[in-house]
Length: 117
Image: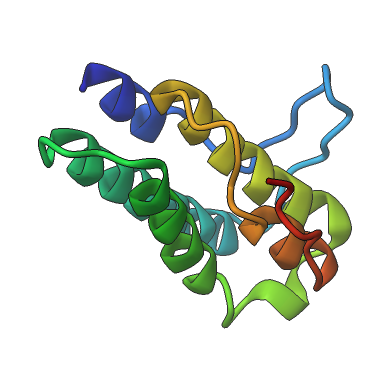
């Protein structure tokens, strides 16, 4: 569970030269965005600690987490939306979740591909 705390302590939406991400310049907006993604980490931790974590429960938490960005989504540029998705992918990696259930694609592009069976 410390991995979730470590994730939350990490400074977010700052410039990352390795990925050419320029970060969010306004510290107030950066703080709001970081708070939203940190709540998603709390959601993931709650599922992990529930005793019965499933892919569906994590995917539901992704959907809820992304919905927290609905009030600022239109103000985010493409790189910032990609960074939001990148943080969710980090959370997915922590729990071994391979698919967001289409939620990340929907957030990023407004559509998702059908899940293959």
